[in-house]
Image 1 (cartoon, rainbow, N blue to C red):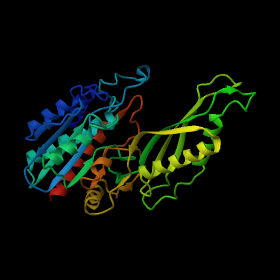
Image 2 (tube, one colour):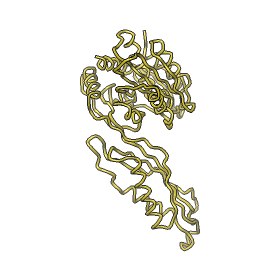
Image 3 (cartoon, rainbow, N blue to C red):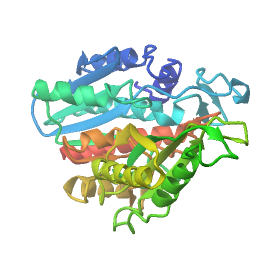
Image 4 (tube, helix red, strand yellow):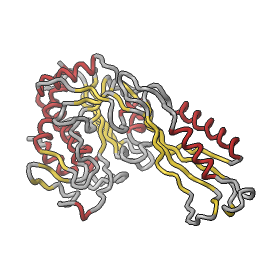
Length: 377
């Protein structure tokens, strides 16, 4: 008998803090191979990835997940070993319990039992990466590159990120805002604060820049997304002397943007603002893009309707179609095929004492099995 709870425990006991594989993908490979999946490691730049396929024909149902986790954090705050997968109070405790080793275990169990008990007329592709929690440069992107080079194509894909609010399936993520993180540097001329004719103050210039960008309303939102938002997260000079004007000032900011924007146009706007500040204050300035995740939206259609109807039949109520949350690897898959996210309740993800109710793992396994049955008819 395949047991998603036991598999969740085994995965948690692999301390796969990104970018370490720590045996997690190997465990998934062995589990899938045992059920007849053809598995290929698609590692790139020492980043561990796994591609697995059952079946030779279409239609093709895809699942994407990750086995890497964020660091455990304050070990003194954990009631149990964060990589011990203890069972207590009807829950499994450990790093990755919610994000997202339980989902991986649930789908692997559902897929393996499905192809063993009622082989479908079609194929299942499972892609797992060890590079989702970090820069995500050589994870799902590398798998999709390999798939394109080898003629592999999914018709639809489900990502197992935590999407639910109260019970598994009550909310499905069909899109996410983009994220753009940047660093700004403005250089002036250092000097004594008593002699304004001898210095050029980069702090004043940065304050002007900060006001210009923070006071702008980016948009009013759309039917699918809330308004885009900009947050200045740091302004710093490293200066501890109140009578010295520093030579330079640094800032960091993050923009969460909807489908009304692209990262390139936002960067162009910020460059224009810096040029204006440079001209007005006589300073030098530069902008560095730290990370970019583009916005995506899978508009309601055949795939979303199928999964929503399956969830409704399973839970007794229609799911909410959401575009909330941060970023996920679904943004890469969006250009490959229709994609959505369906997973656990994310209440404790990334927290100390991360945990998942055992009943939710079992429910999600059955829900995934129902989705496969609905897709293959």
